[in-house]
Image (tube, rainbow, N blue to C red; front, side, top):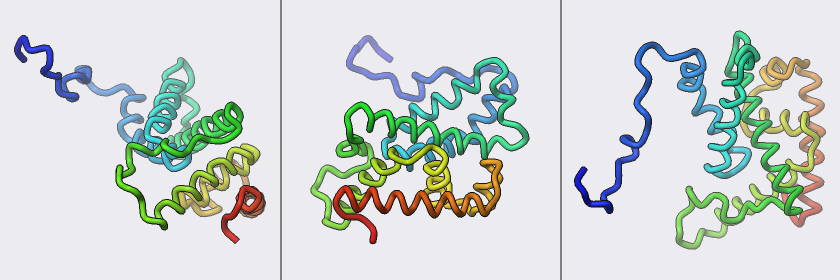
Length: 192
């Protein structure tokens, strides 16, 4: 690195060096599950920046004294639920502030600058409408829907994560789908 101020520091050099010694339990959990939390939040929020915010929030909460005990024996389920809820909260807060979720232009990290083909454009529009409809659902049905439909977990796994029965999850999922269908149709088109 010379005296040239225009020379940028590489990103890897800007990161703090890992601390010497073994990682703390929270660092180990972050290394193992950080990507899961990010991907889950991204699928719900639709934005890399929002997913990073959710990731940071989830792990900052765990860094508070006594909070990491919430993870229990299986941190994956807790963290996946925390990511879903954090992203849903973000979508809901945007919907309540602006009346709509500003989806257009939110996925700019992953979109080509050229015009999109009709099918891709329609899919983006449907994802935006789905996020707005999700913001209208009560928290538990929204969580069940995301875990089942977006994350692809079976009813039995969702029930285990939520401390419920598979039958209750099936009913909540059906009701969430029905409500989402109504919201999408009311907004002007959607799945039949």
